Image (tube, rainbow, N blue to C red; front, top):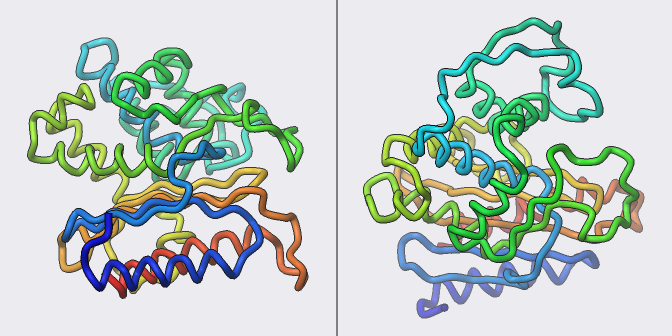
Length: 285
């Protein structure tokens, strides 16, 4: 839905950015000032990579709210948890470290640490997370594994990985944001308002500064989770200006070549493209 001249101009700018690339670019933007949205193939399923971890976090918090899990539960880092893991810091550390489930959730989000993700997922079932997504309305999101398979080819089929849509991710982030003050939104997520506040604070702690973060002013507040997959790069986040939410952007690149025609790695261009989309929204809305 586009009603204002500024949003129309931003829509044109986003279309021009996408037209410059040959790979697939799918996104949805919600202007938090007007409620208007701009989208491109936002309902098409695409590899989620680590953006899936936002919904994993919320499923954990729903289990905490239900009394099945405790964020203070102590977890011991065992060597087996680092097997076949390709992201994060824990795989480089000495086993024996003790941390809480709260800390494991934090590590899963702010560093995309897959040892932490494995710690979290060992307290949930894959079916539980998939059912949670379905129950809250993420119809295009399908969790298919605990940890991404390392041996997947670059051109793997969609049904071998977790998939999502830009539509689902914007809805989820929008609901988390609303749940800070709206009990009905918190209830939709099956969490309390304090747990929703923990989720938003954790997303704001993101330390990986590529994608959405890359072209925005230093110090811009962003609550986000990015991802890297064999077929592309992706990012989803809430961008703030002057302390208030300005827009929510979920952007996914797919079928990105390993190497571009000019010799640049495809993933570099994919991340730059997401950064350009975020910049156009930040300056245009």
